[in-house]
Image (cartoon, rainbow, N blue to C red; front, side):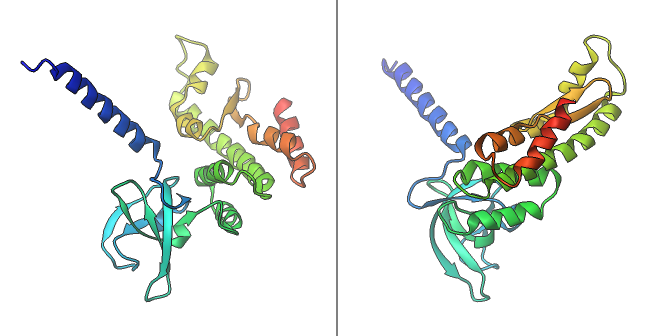
Length: 234
């Protein structure tokens, strides 16, 4: 029996755990400008900078990449060379990705957010707020996030009433609503809701409005944010 066997197995287990953490974190390798996928419809990673080049894989919205060079295809489409992991790299259409250091990308993402609806609008707003921390457009995105979340609250309320179907016995009624599974994907986007037991309706908790007023009290969007918080407090 190898006396070092348990130590070797423990070391291999540590390496596997470390690798799994790196993969699950979604962090790209170094060697390029940080970018993030915002339009998964265009996020086909290809072996060459051409639309008909072989597909390496599809990248999900929110995926981080390291951007290298760029190249224009024969039909005029600009591709970026990106590294996804230490082993995965390829070419992706420029419009699929934004990068905070690149001038104008905050406006481009804002335009995409405004063209989005519902949960998609929330996710893209969250990407903006996480990556464009110094953009002058943040107040507009915070208000868009708040408005989208309140609209989603109305849909969630109707869906929860149908799903739960009035079967409340083992616990207080409001706890069933606050544990409704439809809230989970919003929670992962750090979007919270409160529940009114009298109307059986969810409402957005107003976190984006509070941040807007705290950080940008003189922004044009501040007046609407204040009104939203007043409505929430009634």
